[in-house]
Image (cartoon, rainbow, N blue to C red; front, side, top):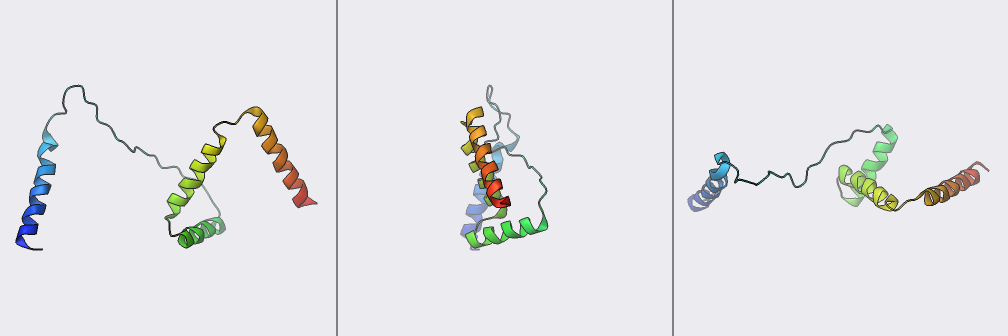
Length: 101
C-alpha cells in the first residue's frame, strides 16, 4: 500500500472511531436495523445433502436458500382462513390417496 493510500485509510478509520465514546444525542434511541435471531431445526443427513447440492447448483448460500423458502411459505399463508386451510388439507389428502393407491 502506498504511503498516501495508507494515510487515507488511517484517516477514515480515525474519523469513524471519533464519536465512539460520545453520548447519544438526547431523544435518540439506538436501533439495530436488521436484528435477527438464529433458529435451529433438525434434518436428516440426506435432506441436508440435497439442500447443499441445490444451493451449490444455484450458487447461493444454504442459509439464504432455506431463509427464502421459509419467507415464501410465510408470505403464501398470510391471508389464510379456516376455509383455505381446509381446502389445502383436502388437496393434500387427495394427493396422499393418489400416492397410496
